[in-house]
Image (tube, rainbow, N blue to C red; front, side):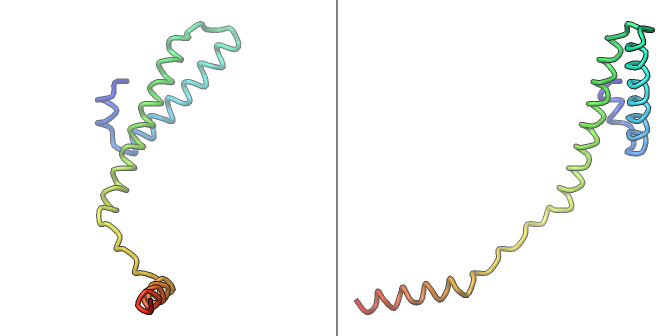
Length: 96
């Protein structure tokens, strides 16, 4: 299946297509082990199609997470202990 066709599928259709391809791959591997078929090219093509589907699903997942996390987190305030250390250092310098 071509990448353009995969990208046009909805998320539910993509999951369904991936399951069907995985099932078909399992059957082809089983037939190959039993010596009923020699369709190595078809197995390779299915593996690549499944990888494409998983890649596109992951890209969609990341795009969704990226859009929800578009607002940067505020910087945490300095810890009180750090402020106390800075004050002590300044006092020591002033005494000298």
